[in-house]
View 1 (spheres, helix red, strand yellow):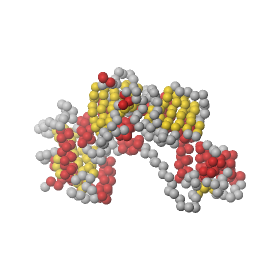
View 2: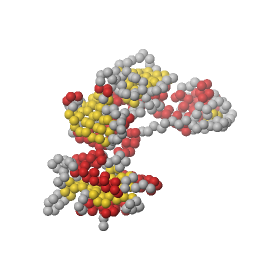
View 3: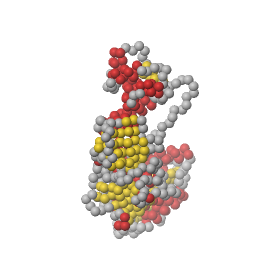
View 4: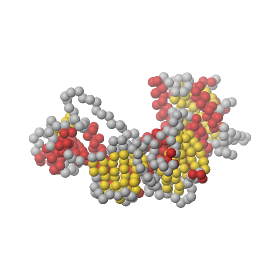
Length: 511
């Protein structure tokens, strides 16, 4: 599902460009392809899935949505439940991932890339001659540790090149093990540490490229662990006020060597001689930039030394007092899209794709507070979908899961992106419609009735002859100002629709 989310993100970033992903189970002759395209004029993405490739491709479905879970469920159901590995689709950038050997993948392609003369995505920045590389992508979507570990797991041999607008780096691998690296002004293991801080840039892997240089001695797992600690320490220094123009000072005058050793032993187990040399080199009139230029230590070393001396209360970082200080430079904060998606998925039912009832109550309360501050309306639609039996003792039963999934897809096509679809208590459902009055909610509910009843949800099983829907609508501030009364009113209106002449009832119309 995370990979479908990535494909959606890439489509929204390249509106007007058709993206395609192809895969096939290793033990069968089945082949599938999935295309997605976002209109340049805005709106949701257009998804199409096919069985077979090229001229043999047979359309399976066409769906317009930005809802990752609904699209993912469609893919799974179209493959018959056996066409996807436990983790969903293979990651688009990684070609043929070894960690999912059940699949082989043709990578993500654009409609323009179908021509054998095209080798790069439009707008990729520096033109990269990717050739037949199966591993290409953008660091905005793939974290550097994940990329390096993928190469290690696949035991790939070749050169990984990373390029951005103002810097580039290269890492050579032998059987997945990094042996040599270069990045900006660094070499070897220092380059790996620098690469772990990169958040943007395009990368591609050139299989078979080799080098005689061997500047990396430690295994990748050790380098990744050290790199993560280095990133944490750099963040600690920034929070302590580390700036090139800041001043560094000793906190204790006339400190004896035994006292110094006793204090630093309470910190990290670093080389004692290196710590003493760093401490002795500090001059109070020098800036941090001047100190580092004088010592010329690798970044991984001076960050550790400075952190240890700060944490053991031996030094302090002070900002210059003279003159008016400019605002500190802002660094873009990375947005972890996978973390956002994980939170979103934890609030939804994996079987239906709808938000859970507790999640609905939470979002309703938050929307109520926003509406109160902005004096904007809210409408809530509580509705029922049942299979109706016309026997002497009529029974209204909940929809089977397959019919409910189709109903959810149809509702999602009609609703706005800001509208929220959720379960309501045990067997009913609800829609939260921000900034919507009763009249607008009524028009919307009638559109939903038409979408649900126009075609059978399951041909021959659930159709207009036995499907009964009932929608009840209540609004703030037209009906009530109290949140609990709003839900009670919507339930009363829904019950009125169940026994009334029409499928949609407004609380304000109930006598």
